[in-house]
Length: 580
View 1: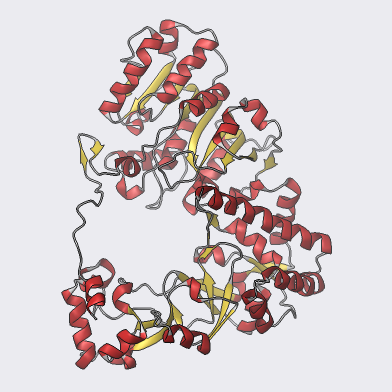
View 2: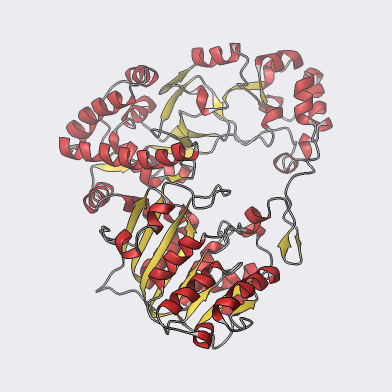
């Protein structure tokens, strides 16, 4: 098994990017990605400044100005409104932590200002600047904050950023990306009635670490417009982004004037900048925010559709999947190349007594039912469907072929990997159990739940579901309706490639009938799904379960189908656009 051994021996990748810094700059080959430094086009900066800046005497802040693209656009906008020379310079302030970039911004501004820009661009940490006493307030804040993971943001800047969030009533954690405190501090730097215009990750709509920010924005503004685009704003970035236009800044929420949030979509950046901001936003129908844990993905829907989904979740006819079952991640081995084996691997090392049937890839799950015959076909095709499970050792020392295989792993330094190194012994994989069903983690079409009749477990590419009571077949069969399809699109999160991802807690929030109905059998659903007739199964189950048991009308079932298709097609269109 020389090929297996080669997989286990670590190689030194001399081209791998690092996150070390030198003179404030990342030294890796992918420095832009690591420091979040993707710059906005001139057309888009002009468009955002056109919306944000309304008067010649507006004071404008750019909290992470980079090479000065936003500042230059802001200067041009102020000049259009009648501000000249020193007046413009005095009303502009850019903060930039990297000295070389700050110099570029000054050099870019000075010819248009006809005035030295030394005081217009300050080389410092934005969070340090923000914490100074007597800092000024601004009429507009514009920019594109860096998209940097919490762990990659150096001290003392990170601590300052987190302290600002806490001072504003938020509770950051180690999942918080640094663009979040940038937005919080920027909003808190505005005057009453001010405007915030930023390019932000689309994660704002959906991830849990941005939930508090969503609530913060609706407290601090009277209206929030978000403009999504079906093409990526930054060609070399894998991050899907959107435009945030927050208006009517205020120091506290208003019960008499609750925030309105609206999502507007455009086919391309060119389409956005070819029209004025008022033209782009003119067709928007703002929706009132509910202050709960709702994600903002729902604002792609109409007001009627949003109200319908809220009523379903609040009513007694539906419940969460979590009422019937718990959803947890699959097995985390620490090194799948070592712990996940094929038939040939098992036979070669004599490991037959130490493996458990496994589903290692969602592609192995073709229908809504996975049985032993399906697993055997994969095994016969020499797919890697065996998990090395050493629970049968009961603490005894490995011998024979097993001992040889473990030594092979140690020669390949498998035991030095993080997950393995913290286990005692390193080769004992924890949490190996057989679930009642598998839940897809990454979804292209429908949030599929697959009944497990193969006595198999799964790796962490697939979630494992254990029922709390009741018949697993009935629970799984009742998930194949438009109700589950629509709610999954709202509870999950989508990325630039068009994939919908469901984490365990999100999967448990998917809506289900509060009384399980008599729909299609799991075998009938399985046959339809394998035949490419998923929608036939959903239509029939929705008629039998949602209409006859839950009590929804045909029009309401049609609305659920339309919600699912609208949200699904939206994200899949971005996947197709990315392949062009």
